[in-house]
Image 1: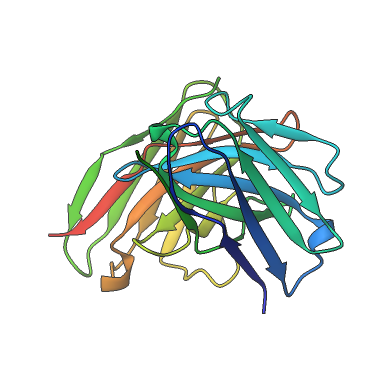
Image 2: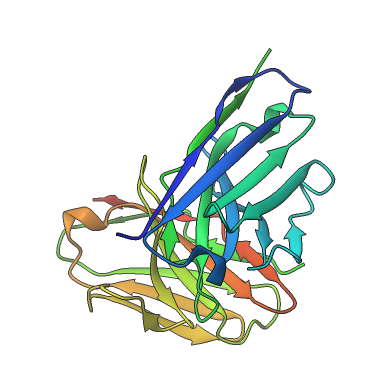
Length: 118
Length: 109
């Protein structure tokens, strides 16, 4: 079945880096634009960034520009989110989501939690 | 930057009744508006896109309307599984633009 599974979250100290992964299955990963969305504790959903099917176009929310980097490996059906210089406000559940282009994200992963704490 | 504002922040409704949620865009977004349902510990679920089109498998009791800057989301005959947080979401493929409202928590009265 169609599925997205995130991994790579954990407890990290401020200033450290982390790379999240999102493995896709059950569909042609290379044919889909992919997004990252996060939810901080007690807060709403926040769009983080998007990557085009071939990886050549990326866009980020202003709040994460310069520290977050999205990439993908279509040969491995995997989406990545590299986060540098982690801050307390990056504490959140991070979701990857599939964008079929004809309508908004229709398949989401269960999320992976990052806690930034000293 | 387009800002999406939802109201109310919390809505208390009885089982079997109707819930009506609102979403306002700070500028016209045509019909590029979706509604998501989100429950704790679960992935968000796409309910409505294009302001009024139900996503695959979504029951008819869920409906959306509106255009430009004013949008409404309605759930008829509320069932216990409908109590969750609902987000409106502006999306635009080019230029890429994606924004969520702050959410409306729908709780049992």
